[in-house]
Image (cartoon, rainbow, N blue to C red; front, side, top):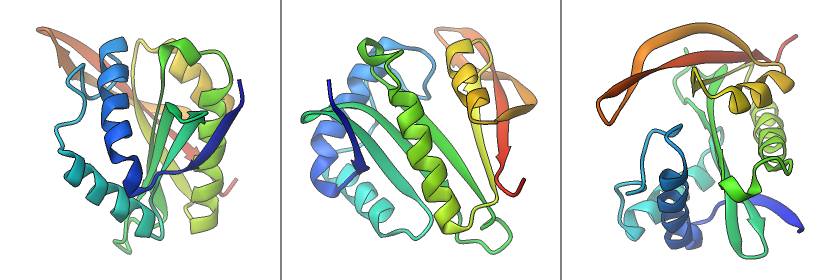
Length: 169
């Protein structure tokens, strides 16, 4: 297995939408389920074009050959009051858990954020997702709060923890 990492392009839209259906069906730790993201291929391509053109946001893919096995995004703001921070999100196909792909994607996102001048990174993670929280702590993230009832899945509520990484220290 040889994993490569790269920025997503508009031409990845169809495969990325299919990936979101697979990953959404594998776990309830994401903001979407087995239906994936509610975009057409054209809408997803436009989103990917915006990411590619943005000076402070990027969507990364982890690929095993041509197969998308993970993705991650850094979302920065153009607002001068928020341009010092960015939000992160990451996912990896279940069959690829424990193979360092989440770490590889985190490295991509943190390096990109540093290049853009981001000083503070944040993310939300389901409070009971210990595997993901261990990954984030490995990179220096700390929890700064909990949002009760953040998710409602099949009538059951789940909290989310907010985590942050200060890149200036």
